[in-house]
Image (cartoon, rainbow, N blue to C red; front, side, top):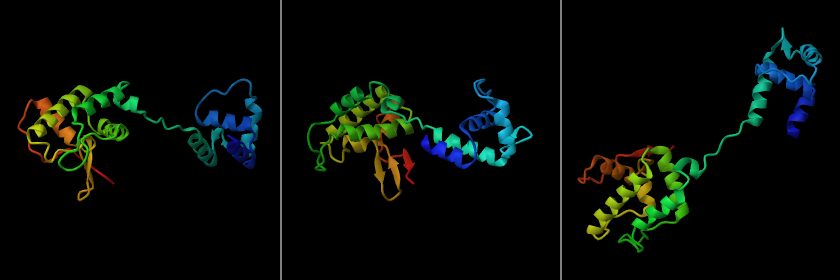
Length: 197
């Protein structure tokens, strides 16, 4: 805020004239607590207004002011994955075995890593939690019959970077699609990928 006041003064404007200029630029009706006619005369003298409309430098100033106040609404995990996301992540994690896989990696990953991967998954794909849970059960059952050989960890099942192609692959998305289509004939080539820039 202090930066805006110093900028206003350095441009030869008062807070009231800046307010009127901003209102005119945004087609808003200024408050009656500010004397618009005095401020408009000041803005015209300083070439901020030409024929009652913002000049080029006024438009640039208004755009700059907008940048100060633009807030990027940060999407929370609850916004992206639903209010019960943490419970659903725990439910997802419980599907995986509690031991190391033949790859010598633990099947269950840290919940925070899973949260980050699920944030990506929900922003990239449109599957719901019930589909995710059922597809995951299908995946783990399939690999349990094979002694968990080549099974991905709970984290890499959601999203894994393919370094050669610089894309993210989601085996979970593949299994969600198979689950929704009612097919248990599944090839292991991942076809859901996202290019990493």
